[in-house]
Amino acid sequence: MIESRHFKQKPPSFLRNVILLPKQISMTIKASCVIHCGVIWHGNATIGRLCAGVTTPSLPAHTDLVNLLYGAVAEQGGHLGLYRIETQVTPGSGKFNGSGFASNAPAKESVKVGFDCFRANANRVSASIKAGDHDYHLHVVELHNTGPTTAMTLATYVALCSAVLGKPVQSEFVILGSMSLGGNIVPVENLAESLQVAFDAGAKRILLPMASVADIATIPGELFAKFQTRFYGDATDAVFKALGVG
Image: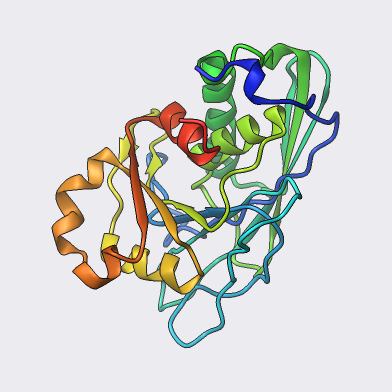
């Protein structure tokens, strides 16, 4: 558990976290769909496409801004759908509101499940988090007009923890994998390709799910050696390590 002494400053009453998320391959994917590849870093970055032959974002080595960017790949003819999620945390009574999903029910449900996971498990992350003492608003902005995404559950959980604590994820940092709407961590699909995307974006540190350990043999050795690698077992463990306190 993260004790409150790890956070020297009181979290601001208003935080905007920025997360970039993938468009799912098909809007008919079942509710248990997951993120295929994720890239998390903090600070300002140029928004680009993470695909071959196109300029990619560069992960900043350091910044004092409390921002969270999340980029992920959804392959559909080599195209990437990018999203920005703005997270506002204010004093309140535990209310949650999401916007920017149009009428896409699975997208709304994905974020709602991430919030429910946060509300149920926030005290496992830090005893200082009182989920019921704040109100939360997540707004999704489509950057490439690719339609709503249903892969927001783990990203929502990590973003809310980061926002309410006022602590960004590590710099030049990538987290791969996701969780189903049931809360289970799932392996990364196309792990080697996902790592190549992370490397092209400037990542130096990666966090992999334990569920993907068996697939490490598929990664070219020269690529895997470019990263400092750690593993997480569940969503809360991912938060600890993403924030650099676990």
